[in-house]
Length: 344
Length: 217
Image (tube, rainbow over all chains, first blue to last red):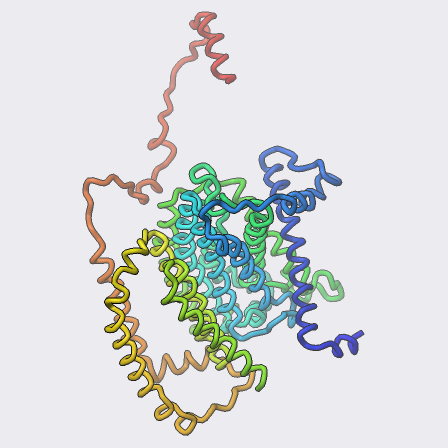
């Protein structure tokens, strides 16, 4: 089997690996939409979708088939090329970001040195899909949504970038595998504790970056109908949807990786001798990611939408100062070799 | 080497075509998007030169932030293409002259005389263990620390100047003080609890039924 694998050309090997990452990801996206409707349903004392399949378990497939059958309506005077290009621009960075994501020790498609930087650069490209969609639709609601989204994402990207600067100061590396390795130990040596303010800022900025409630003013259905994707229908709309959910999963997985120890087990090594399932492994990363994915839904069901000026204030006047101060604190702690995190 | 060279020519061609489109497209939004494409392919060229830090930062800073704000402004513009085209022939000679002079100057400085292979032999490719980011950081914060800090201060001056130029007090607009809003407590600031005796016995039957109807609605 291994000989057969090695005999394949490198391009084919990489292609197979990409498919092995993207297909489960798209499956997760599909079932994340179901999870969202179910979780929010139960939070609001409803049942949620329960007609298609066992307890609604085939609902995402029904939705996908419905969206594929629908006509893609292109508005008059819309910029046709950009209108159809926008959903692709939205989803491409959301998928490409997974290239540097390590799923377990050494299990990564491209183990590059500047992994964190690459992720930051790619997540910053996602906004183009939204802006181009808003402009190309030739609709004032779409344009307003795009404008809101652009200002919001630029504001929160800075806070997010600074939070990640704190992570790389603490880990001493931009490589994602090395960042997890730097958190080795137990629950308390993970970065969530020494970087607690940055962790909070990162998570909230991540929600703002993905345009999720309570930061979803780019859609704001009570004010601007559906924001940037008001003119989209059928598959073109579905691709925006996929991109948004893929981004949510990415932010959740990154939170797990950068602050919660990734695939590291929360139990000390001595406790888990002989019990493989409690040791380090991919399943821990998956569990932590699922937790953050749940937090996304939980917040959406809990909080009302933020007012726009308050969003801007939170980004520029609260988060950025917090991150700058805490980067300084972390840098000093690293210099002082503060135990248990940075004792050499 | 073959594949790398092929990639170089592909990205170089995309950069040049995109840059050409930036100045020939009539629609300013299209021009900005072509500029984004030019940035991305030049970032790819830098990565081919093993300058992955610079390449990624180019995308992060210019494409991810600067061009987003650029698009933001350009989308708001209501460009009248007819007036833009109006003086084209009249300004063509002087524009062409400036372009030729500029091209000549660039060629004299960046030409083979100064940057040929004799002056700069192609460097030995560094191994995969060399961290470009680390090398750059070491140089930037030791050898070039003063130019680096001075550049930062100049940028700060520019920020302060831009804010000062656009800042204006408008006493007639009403705005909220978020600090005050945050400080509001639900107790004494928002609701007042009034103690009063029960009145159910004194209320006439008709009014009582109206009241219950109201509450069920």
